[in-house]
Image (tube, rainbow, N blue to C red):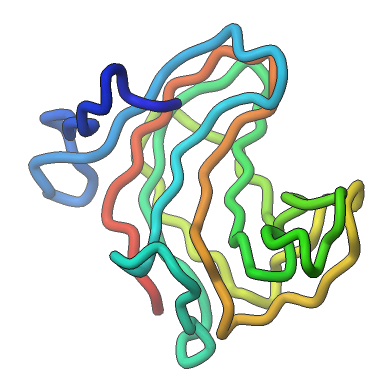
Amino acid sequence: IAPPDGTKPAPTLEGAAGTARSMHIAGGGFTDYGAGLILFPSAMQCTFDVSLVRGLGFWLKGSTSSDKLLVSAATLQTVDSKYCGTSCNDFHSATYTLTNTWTHYTLPWTDLKQVGWGTPAPFIASQVEYLQFSFPANVTFSLYLDEVGFY
């Protein structure tokens, strides 16, 4: 989901675990690829080394008509056509079920697996380009995300 006219997304006034704000996205009707939220660990939007941490922690709540939220780590090997040819964007991912209450999750890097439709690639933790929280095509969703960090 790209904010209209280049505006920046604004946090909502509801947070998890005592925080005052969180990120909220909602939508539906995306028929080609679905929709989601991308987080760049590096302000330069280049590869980032997460090999010194075990995984990702975050708080979620929300709903979706598909019961699927895919949390993914996009690496150089799954984004750059030099490595994946014409079958890119099969990121290393894990699937989560959303609830209407704030829930804390941890995602160890060892749990990440490619979905399987793209070019097979190893997960190289030193070459993460971005993190993605996404929904498949043809679903309606609402996602609140808070307190994202490495552990």
